[in-house]
Image 1 (tube, rainbow, N blue to C red):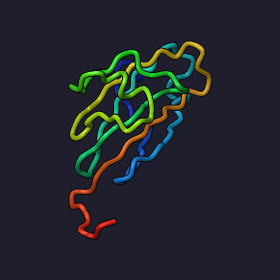
Image 2: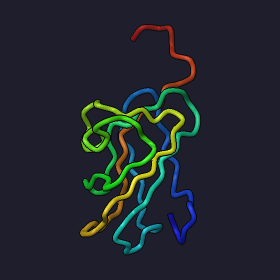
Image 3: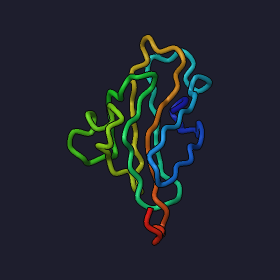
Image 4: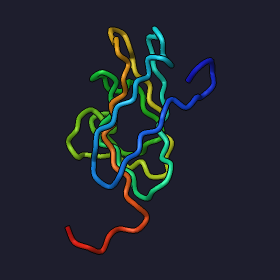
Length: 119
């Protein structure tokens, strides 16, 4: 969030396999001590987030998810996922001591039609 308004920092495409993507936020965050980011699905069917962090720091606050233990689930890559389908998720990170300001996201988004070919 910049000056009270949301701006698009980037787009990270995912497929039906869990994969890790990174997005540099330094141009948007400057020397701020807090990052407020929003993750929103664009396209596809079921979506699951396995982990999200900025330079290894997990979110201080998460809104838009209803699962229990959401902080534990987002803290590490372990296939204990949260449902992100058609949700807008807002995350707040403390950035004290963080230099590069790169968000690291592990996620998958299934296609609308699942292949009928086994493995």
